[in-house]
Image 1 (cartoon, helix red, strand yellow):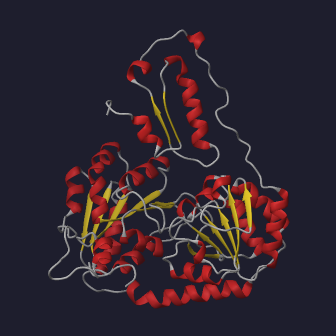
Image 2 (spheres, rainbow, N blue to C red; image 1 turned 90 degrees about the horizontal axis):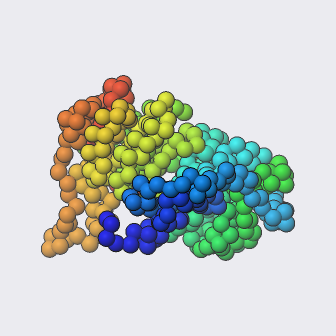
Image 3 (cartoon, rainbow, N blue to C red; image 1 turned 60 degrees about the vertical axis):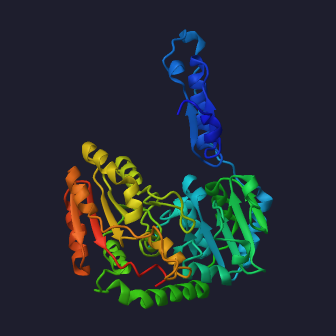
Length: 435
């Protein structure tokens, strides 16, 4: 690790990367790192302190300590842009709000709730904003991912879109919206405003502050017909999948597992999501009940596989009074399974629920059309691993489930064990999120 240029490596994946070369400047560099990480668009910072620098001695008089590491004031939007955006929102017939991570990091939960309740605009949340305003709110529609049929249908029929602190990525392009739809985009990063999208109004500012301005500027409205249309579509989707939610088939249908987990999520629960198809199932079914209480790989665009166990441990350490449930696939779980040793040694109690189809399911389904007898699947099938016994061997609590009727009781026992726990649920390899 010491024989290559780590700074250049980390510059490609962090917001700021520096190497401290003088002991007396350590506080200066740390202060700059904190400022970079927490201001503007938040992001990770890498700070390299070589051992000889860290262990060096200097005269105290050479060290300068900053009193302030970050600014507490947040930038608001340009008043002219606010006025223009408010006029468009007032005239909209089928508007939607899409809130992303920028809304979460600006702590805009109260402002988002006040805005949608005044305007009557239905809203979607994605990434870190899941649960910013709980899914139980009557104006919440669904997760903001184009793979979700309700979201896809809504943005194909909208006439005004208010995008709050989120990047479109490859899943939400300009052509995802009607050609005549007007897009209002709010972001703390000016360069991000026109990234991938042609916008009618771009507002550079902190999401929380901009929502305060917009709420003051817009007229009160209800959009009752539009809200009811979306709610009816949502109800029809639930009705269509209801037989799957109560299915007793064997191997277990993943939707039945989601139904059992849903019954055990309340306002005191943090949900962590990991995996491929497993993440898609979780994002489609499991509710977000509060800010920061739904964590995982980026909704719809995915991210680093195998983050679930460390995410769950960190969530429990940050919120020891909350129940932490991790939903993961068997492939993803393998990346961090041995961290259960750490969890058990330090008493970090959380419950992992594995959707175990003994396969890299998402990849198998994407390769299905290309596989033939002459060119079969390669490297996609996993063994029926008893991960529950692995966790038990380390000192945790394990449950093995092969019958749908056993799921609920197994999860309840795992949660009540007061140990790091694993519920290993054997599910149908032939069922994906779209079946």
